[in-house]
Length: 386
Image (cartoon, rainbow, N blue to C red; front, top):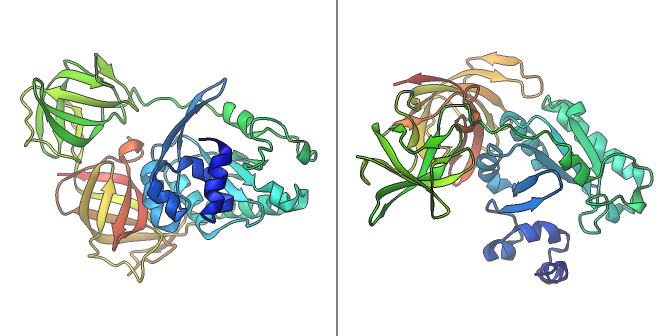
């Protein structure tokens, strides 16, 4: 489908400014709504790298995707429109990115064509974003600002004649000069299970994405919290048998002695001699984003961590953190509400495998959902194992 068609289709539906987000939205239902929902994985490559875009939704209801998505992202491009400036969700996204471990940002100041490529409009937007970054303790030296027009193509893949006042990198150069992420192959194996199938001639086949470590045929593995173990007989990727799988690989595999009813979605597969942690309780740092009233001890929403969804009770609110400074604002507060960051102790209502984010960040972040929306996001500080 050509850009022209995309544009016409977008304008016909009355969402003219959305053309390029539009190319990312693969689902027809999303197109009707004009909102980015699911995480659409799109690939593109440059001379330097192959990139996968995790299209992070800039919309209130979809912060959960942002969380489950950002935990898998190595870098972030924050797009802020020169004509609108910083939006309420911009701060939320920056704070989340930082909480979930993204340490540097490329900030694309978009829609420069709509402000006639005016340098002072660009500078105003840059200052707004810098203020916001400072508020969440994001080092502005780790952010690179670029004036672009996604629609006209300015400063995307080639230098624009419309921004003679700008002499920094264009978007493509900024992407190429990102440091290459180190795959977490040295960490212990952690493979959250998405589904369990029965395939004739093979038997039970759990399917999931290797988050850390390496899955080898012949390995002895353990599934937690189901607490069953066995030897890996085969590993398949893209319908071909492979000897091993590494971080980022989506695989199906078969384990001797492990049946369909022994394991389920939300289990985590790891080495039998160093099995994944199962939490009796865990301490976490959370950020409350949208809760209609206040959160107190005893609150029991659903925690979404990797592929698991488990109701968990907030046993205690240990401290309230000032999100702008990171300092402790109050010990043992009675409640927390929107905009608050806090350290809490949590008790899962049924067994949950989760890891401290300082040890295995890929299994250390979660979203908290209740009443059909994402209430909070957080990362695990420590696990008290059962």
